[in-house]
Length: 247
Length: 247
DNA sequence: AAGTGGTCTAGACCACTTT
DNA sequence: AAGTGGTCTAGACCACTTA
Image 1 (cartoon, helix red, strand yellow):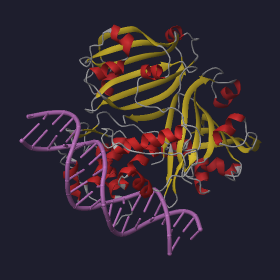
Image 2 (cartoon, chains in turn red, orange, blue, cyan):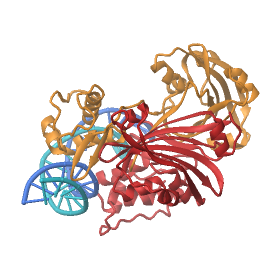
Image 3 (cartoon, helix red, strand yellow):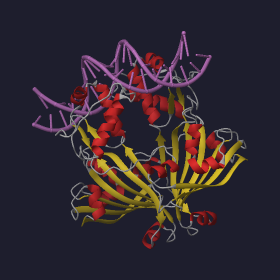
Image 4 (cartoon, chains in turn brown, purple, orange, red):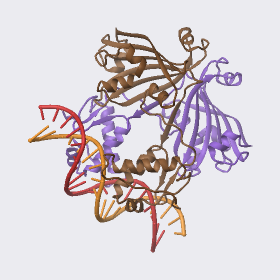
């Protein structure tokens, strides 16, 4: 039951970890149909031998794809490709990156960009003293000139220069990365509510119409909270994809 | 910088994997404040020594918590507890389980429970021939007698007995588990839209009012799609929590 | 220079499923 | 009985960060 056209090979001179090289090649084979839905993989030891790898390394490659929802394993049975087509996953990217990757032309209008005392909830989320200074950003995001999302963000005031011009051309996350802040974890709450008059006006909908909402707190690799966001999206243009894997 | 009150120990006679024992104890210590936000853990080798474990096993315990968003690691620096309080995570559970765990009293009314030819989209999601037979379930879920969600599910017709009485008392996922079907992966799309007249009536809202929606395809450990769901929720009573970790 | 996590190896034994 | 994934060990070397 092994796929015939499947060719795997690793490059030991590459800085890319061996397990990730293998995982990428397997993911590509699943994407392009070389490994069709339901296909059974050789067992871990055989695969490791074929590639000249140790079993733990081969196993880690498989684990990466199990975590992404592309493969399922069953003890005593084997490893198979999951049925069903794969959709884009929810990852730790900004909406700006998402749109650029999807080939849309994202534009941003900065509505507010100012230093304000932190509202109670924001201070709590960011782990700051109440009333401490934070930068408030309010932006309108458009894709191909159609309004798509209204983004409000609060960040520790010293974290980023955030001149409005850079924000309009590059997106907040990219600016943070340039400033040496690498986001690692985001906790998001996704919900829905009716649009307020202001929101409706900016997003080009009728007041009270359904909006998709997200509140997000993002943490850097230092463990500190560096962003709290309160966003709303036009639900006809945006949705969230999540893949959940049983632990 | 090691936490003083932290006491870790493993039971080698337990069937619970050692790495999971350690991960649970660390998670508890983070929950109850023994390991406060920002606390730095000893390095992996020292921790492994203290517990009489090998480094890979200790590492796997830490990896489990990094994946849950409780810890962050930084090469050359160390491992720390993430700042910010932890919220309940989105897992592969049914809404019924969610509510029961939250101490609510969930009740279910089965509105439809019949065998129908599969609509095109459903057949595609489940990997069945178009027009093949599927079971259509339509249920109204309430928590403490307040309407909360309207759930429509399609399943392969042979998969579950699904008598309506059992569905009202136990929830679909539990019935599937009892029938030997173990869900492993779910792909979910979360969005929003206005309520139709029928939905509004059932959920006790006004037509056009915002609803939170989810379409889900769930896969068993056999890799086969076993459930397609199209759900809508009252957004004042339900939201989704997602933790995203940078790969 | 010292300390950390990141990767990798070559084994071992076990639990579970299928034949 | 045979084959699979699940767990665990005891090392090794490397890349990165901080002092």
